[in-house]
Image (spheres, one colour):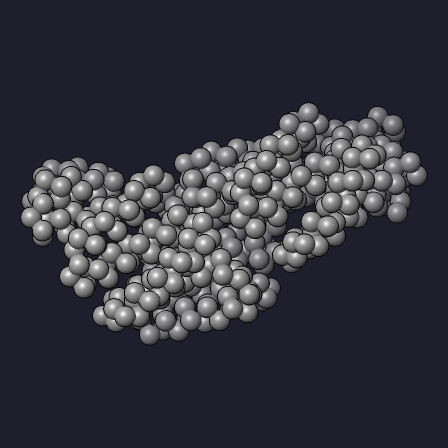
Length: 433
């Protein structure tokens, strides 16, 4: 590989344009000539380019004594492919080899990348503490080397872990910092920046800030990266559709969710397709079409079965239970709710546990078991309030307050009804009325 080819390869792997690599000191035309091997750079220019690429002059020149860097680069490229395909065992094996070579020959860039990919695997396997430990190691190493691109990715992964742990107030500032850092790194064409936008939109959606969420998703859709990556585009469209649905704009939600479904189908991205089918089922239910909703949700379950995973079983089972409850089929409603609770607890997802608990409480109300329903409502409400989830807190507090009022517990009822009004942003005049 020639010098120009190595520079182009590293630039593209960092998500940089030729202008961004030049950074105002080297022109785009000069970088273009350099990558075509039509000009030779000075040593100072090579030092500047190597620093911006997070590499070394020797590595750019392909010196033999930097063969370990090339070995690490190959191993890390293979591990990224394995990680994308969710072949975690193969990815771990490749990362172990890369880590050994990086440590033995002091290839610092590869060592930092190994930690980041290890954190990604641990997060995807829901080993959140292990992921955070890897990121704690990577963070100071990135700071010392002024590796802004990887610093941004550290923040993105931390924020994503917190979203998955449903610690939304902690996640939002981390994701905002990730975006700012990736922008400073001039990673305009880097997928990580788009992923940060999508994850920040997701976090804002959890808090009920749907306009803010939609703005982030729309920025992701408009990016150059998303225009060429159907999976990222599908995720951003899906986010807009979900936020529009939550905001009550059902017609717009349907359009965006259908676009997201088409994007995932074209990319054969089954995992995301399954989740969009679930959202379409929810939307159809809200539009008064329970049969069509169940058809989409059971299709989502079939895709989930093809994937051989159970991580999303809880949320799909919860939606199926919700529809059965609405049609008065209490036996099926309770059966799917218990399936959802079992799956959510196994996955360690407190929000899905709370969502399923609310449904179980409503089933208890339908069965005239008010005492059992009240306890379940209180358990779910505590989980939602702890995570500052406004919409869920408002709905559950109101249902609980009305149930307590029916039982004659007017003081308790007033407190919960006032809570529901306060969370919804409505002045609580006389909640007991």
